[in-house]
Amino acid sequence: MSLPAVVPAPTSIEAGSGAPFRLASTTVVKGDTDAATALSAIVEARTRLSLATGDGAVIELRVDAGSGAPESYRIAADEASVVVTGADAAGLFYGVQTLGQLIARDGDGWVLPAVTIEDAPRFAYRGLMLDVARHFHSVDTVRAYIDRGASLKFNALHLHLTDDQGWRIQLDSRPELTEKASGTSVGGGSVVGQGRGGGFYTKADYREIVEYAASRHMIVVPEIDMPGHTHAVGLAYPELTEAPTVSEHMRETIRDYGGEEPRTGTPYDGMAVGFSSLKIHDEATYDFVADVFGELAAMTPGPYLHFGGDESLSTTDDDFAVFVARASAIIADLGKTPVAWHEAGAAPDIADITIGQYWGFLTPQEGAAEKAIAFVDNGAQLILSPADAIYLDMQYPDLPGHGLTWANGPTSVERAYSWEPSDVVPGVDDSGILGIEAPLWTETIRTAADIDTMAFPRAAAAAEAAWSPATGTSELRTWASFRERVGALGPLWTSMGIGFHPSDEIPWATE
Ligand code: ACM
Image 1: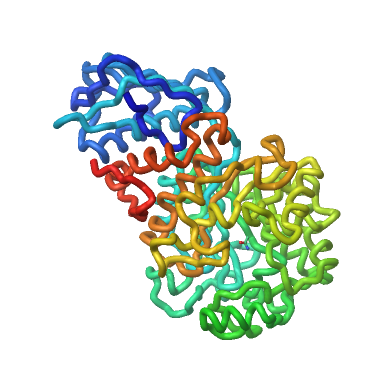
Image 2: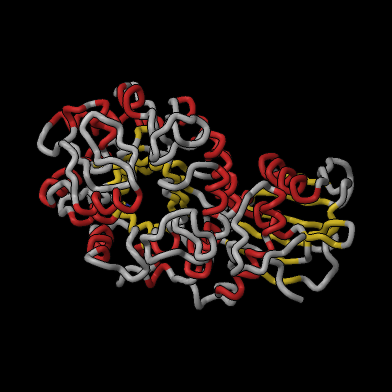
């Protein structure tokens, strides 16, 4: 008998020999009420059955504190009963997500197969990133992305809140940022709701996102990108930014994608990078950094504040090092852990607790690995986001017209899947890896439907890199196994309203 399909692959799964557990309108769910609510929602979406509170066969959901590693769970299912035990509330929640994937049709009815699963995450940090700066995305879209991510056992939502094209988070200490720099996005225009007209989160919106994420066992990691990617800052506080530098790269981007050259005091709605910088030798800049991160720290219960640090191509190396040292120290002094893209590893005086986010290729190029290794040498860790594997905004080979191609051309589902985290940055093994994150940049991504298309199924490949055992240590951790398992999720995803790309690399199940 073939094993039931679970994504990300669990630590161990054994098919039972007996009959399956039958789901019916008399099936009772008992135990933890949050987990019962989560399970009832999945069962109802998939089967139209409402779980009961009467006296039928029982699905029991319980936390047995300390019964395993953090976020771990066990499932024991047979004909008579189903028991999901989490070592903590997050573990129980993940057990429920797995149970949702196990629901299968059986003639006119629905069953959960007889099975025993033991499961725990490989990495503590499992992230999705959404760029809400290039195109703004509503609170509803973010909530939907949280649900989707949590169903794959992601536990961090990184929001790229600011960039050259717009500032998306209201701050009382710096009100001009959203008053003057949030109204536009890539492509300009003014059709709000189509992602064209810009927008921002109020503090109440941000609180709602943080609380919703927490209810799905996710933290929010806010990013304010600095010292580059700051043209929008200059619309609000011109005294803080340098004049734009127009490079050959920028002229190339304009040739390829259109748009204008950036101009001081005018919103930028193109797709080029690397032309803006905060003023590095002006104390007003660090007052700004302290205000922004101080307020964000108070709004963000999670431990991480991300200060960007990528593609600061118009800041000199020496100035960049000065800025990174100061910004990382400001965040560390707030009691938070700074996170920065890997370029910041070049700064010798970066706060040594800073987590580096590697966004180079699977085979590192041009010094990227050395910069990433610097974080580990400092005693901190890396988040891996290899761009030619899990940048979810890269085109699929069979879907031209959606997404970009700069990261080694289009990214197939197989390429998104077929890599091993401990093989990416030479010398950095699991002890140096905090986790895995799949970013979704939105230069060309405007709607919730676009997000679904780009993220699914490739986000599932990233989830498996983040959660599942290392390649070579589990027979499930192969492309051949993954494509079958992820294909089996098609009907569940459809029932949950996830508009995945029906890639022809995957044998999609139809019911
Ligand atoms: C990045 O893709 N610039 C982090």
